[in-house]
Image (cartoon, rainbow, N blue to C red; front, side):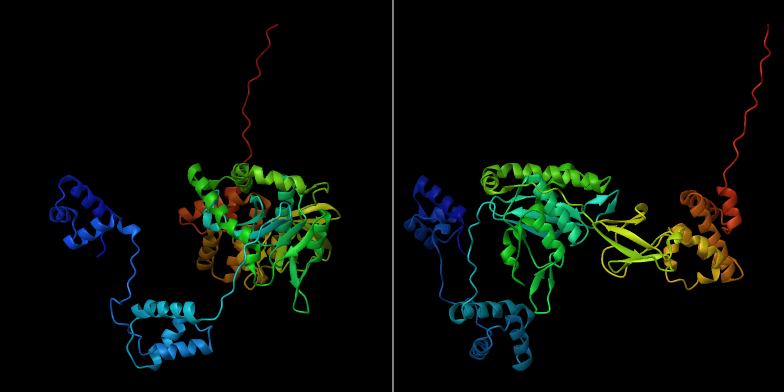
Length: 481
């Protein structure tokens, strides 16, 4: 076992006191021969590199190495783990799982000594004000909550590589609306415009052409042209070309996590409060980069273009189901709009539905495909008249606004003689919730369930119906003339 620096310091201290090597070695906890060696060297163990040319144990793969080396010459892309598993099955020898790392070390040493040349990455010097690199990174791992519920979100992260100036906006997906919002927020914050806007090959900026190459989306080109920049992207599968923003993604999330710890809580009352707090964190970080940022601002063009609206607009027909389909997801709208065409403003986090330029509906935007957001208030009037459609209704599960409503329906189905009677009672309860206030109906249902009473529609209505206020009798005083 190799001696430590602390042992050698103790040895030297004892020798300086009495000069007896045997006593000093004993008190330092080492062999006298080792003590004499370090006395002569006059160095600490950490200052003496130790290399050995012997093995501490027998190489279990000694007989297999010629075969393995031959296979690596023929197919250099073979992985050590795959070769190890192949050896275990071919040679008949009983290798253990713990010997895998020994085998991997041997393969790595052969590659370093005799393997093919590896790809070299060349560090680049960034020019001030040349490009704004933008990337998306998931931030759900930060554990941010909004009103106590986990907030699943991403950050759109623009960076100036020369100065490492950065900004970030909260988003839900890698959409064009999110990219537009992130780039515009960064440019407005800077007040200047770089020469290039650089992204990776996300579908928000590029799309696949029939030639197999990646081209820019027309909407993204229009965005970049509006601010006087040129679009630029990385090679397909070459994320290292976006290396600065890729590296700063991790640094950004670590910084945010540390400030959340300093804040003492990861919970915010609203998304707006979280975005404001995030802006303060980034402003403090950018304050340390002002010197190199000044070099960038000096060569960048002033921002003269106006900020674009952060939505795209399109028209959609309203189906006979009282739904529209926007970006592969379904949303319900008021049934009076059936067979009409509505104009939809698609924001990154919400949809606004207009008819004849009058706002009809604002709803949260769904992420992904084949999702649905159905509001029972839009169609309950028709469903009450057609209760037979409810058992096999495609969006039936959307008609249980909370667990209380679901429990009430299950109790109705068990207590009443037929499923139709249960459906009629439940739909009348939903009709009451749409006509009055859902929270009051839910409270009435919860009260009936606690009492063990079957929540029939008439009983719920009796609890919810408004009470006429009692007028107090006020005596009229007699006037004494």
